[in-house]
Structures are given as C-alpha cells and as structure tokens.
Length: 397
Image (cartoon, rainbow, N blue to C red; front, top):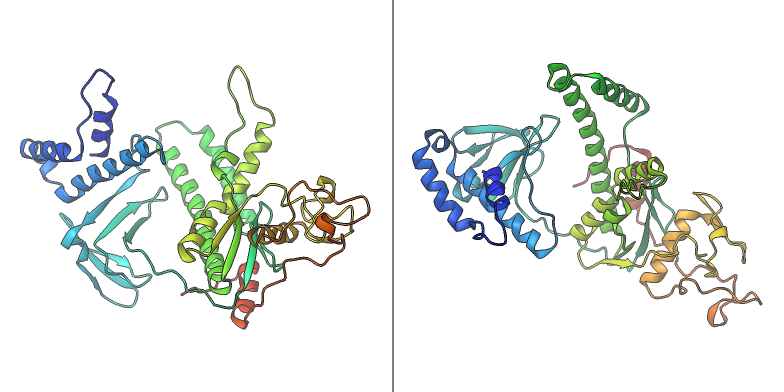
C-alpha cells in the first residue's frame, strides 16, 4: 500500500491533476478490496494505516523537515500499525511473556520487557537481522530534576563519546576485536558472492545480525547515560551541532572530486557510532526545558582558566595545555567546561585574545580559577558512573 501511494505521487507533473489525498486513497482502497480477493484477505486497518503514514510523511516533506517518501524494500522496511480498540487487546501470560491481538492473525506472543502502557496504537516491525519488535505508542513521563542546582556541560567526541565538565568520560561500546574481524571477513565474502544466490542472502543476514548487535549496545549506552544526566543535574549544556552536515560525504562530484574521502568516511563512522544525535534527542525527551544548546565554535581551543583561544593549546586529542597561563587538563573536559560557561553566560567571547600583560578580557587575571565548578554528585551517581564507563550492565528503571 505504501509503494502504491508512492507510485501515485510520482506520476504528478505541473500540468496534471494533483495526486489523491488520504481520503480519496481510502475510497480507492475500499473499491480495490471489493474487486480483489487477495487484497480483501488482508487487514483493512493495516492497509489504511499505511496510507495514513504516507500522508504524514508527505506533510513532513512539504513542511521542509523531512525528505520525500521513497519506495519501501522487501526485507528492509517490514512492519505495520494497528490502531483503535484492537490495539488495546493485550494481556500478560507470565513474568516474561505477554500476547497481543493482531487482526487476521490472532493472538501473538511477545517478550514482556517492560510495563505495557495504556496506548491507543502499536507498531510491529522487523529489522534487517530478522527480529520482530512490537512498540506501543505512548509518551513516557519526563524524569524530574534533582533540585540540587547542579549544572553540567557535555562535550561529544569520537574517541570519548561524551565528556562531562565534572571529569567523567563516557565511551559508547561497539563490536569487540573478534566481532570486528568477523564482520570484515563476512563483508569480503559478500563481495565475492553471486547476486541473488542463497549464499549471499545468508551472508547478508549474518552481517545484519552483527550490525544490530552494535546498534543495540549503542542504544543501551545512550539510554543509561541520558538517564544518569537527567537524574543528576538540573541544567545540562550541550553543543548545538548539525550532525547531518558534519557526516556528509566528501566524495564531491565527477567534475570536482573530493579530497581525503576515506579519512572523512572514517570520521563519519566514528561520529555515528558515538551516538551524538541519539544522546541529544534522548536528553531532550527525558529532561525537557533543562537542556541548553550553545555555539560550538572554539570550545576545544579555548582555555577554561584564562579564556585564551589558541589552536596550539590543543596538543593532542586528549591533552590541552594553554600557551599563556600554562593550564593543563584533559582536552574534552576543558571543552565541556567552556560549554557550561557559555550556557551560563560566564564564558569569554570566542576569538578574544589575552592582553600582552597577561590579563584576560575586562581585566580578568590570566591565571584565574575555572568558572565552572564540578557539580556535587550523590552516592547513587557515583555508583552509576564507573559502571557506564567500564561497560558493566546497569539496570535503569
């Protein structure tokens, strides 16, 4: 049904009549179900919701927030949505099992991983690894602020996925050395396989399972880290980054080819594997109104002690040594302190140099103490941080 709607929209031209909207498509669907027994054998709710999803996608495209809807491929975009009274037919069988009523199918069991909310719809999807998932549409309650007046700055990086101004370092887990070696070996075998063969389909499934394992670990890291931040701090400052443009390919065009394409591709993979976008999105979901986005320019080149902006102060990826006041610190922690200074309006203006007499802007001494003080941590937060950075599983309620 989705691809039929895409086909209808692709036939539109400036001199032709506009493509049918959702109401007209529903009327056409009713007529098509009456003429085709194979179409009537399917659920009318599932088919109609596919058209509604397409209508919402077109509205987002015309609003300029999303790209134009494209074709859905078998084995990649599997799924459907159930709404209305049928979506509320859910019952629990045991501590780990539940079942849901799916039209034209019957009762289907699923793993009861958390409490099912009182939702009016649910969506069943199948990922590339062949796993089926069910998700109930419900907006969870935001995490309340601790009311301790604690503030923190978060610097996102590639080697260290998230660094706090308090000194904590978070690293998103990925595939292990043996898993990465196996993934590379499978990709090489896939390149030698014949298109359309069973061997190629088997290799594709094995690669998809490894990729899904890496994605699950990254999502688990993001959920635990954002929950810790939302519970521990009243104000969370992050950089305002355009990740879509930052991860754009450097290939260029045939006429104007790009340079250092492989290096840029590796950087793009590092950014995406660190979960920058998911981290910011989940923070806004869990702590709405408590997230402050600041300008990202020169945060890694500015000294958090004296405000001097100098690219030479960044000695390496992890080392920062100010060329004026001699302040040394972990480079990402220094950047996180600059982020929180900007969020609170206490930071120096980017590009403003220290005077020749050693004083900072507006007469501030160059060797002043950092304006961002580490936030106070509770016993619970001290217990969570080592588990997050060490890779140990932490159960988040």
